[in-house]
Image 1 (cartoon, rainbow, N blue to C red):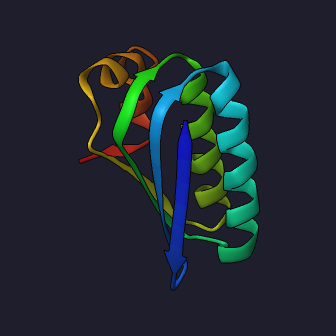
Image 2: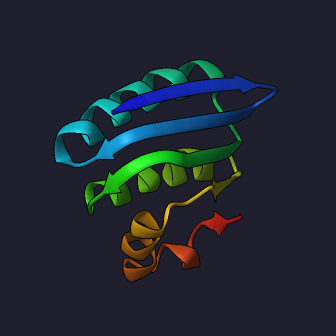
Image 3: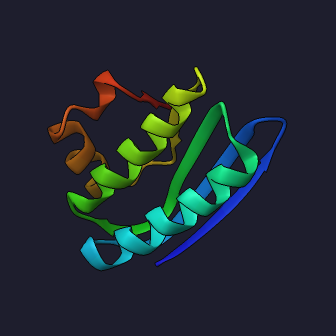
Length: 101
């Protein structure tokens, strides 16, 4: 599991790769919290193109980003969603809260 965050002008891109399971999700959320405190993003793009597996812990990661953006009056867009991860996220109904592109 790896996470990279880039941000500027209150926009942040979060690129996640590897397995997003209960062990990896904690590390991802800790890194997100650190980066979000610095950038204070209004709009967040989450790129899942490198995710090889996601369980329900991935839902918590995306909800953390959603809450952070919401506090700033912004949005979260999820891009490059692998099929398996997409099934997990659709089952949870996240398409009602987040933008998927």
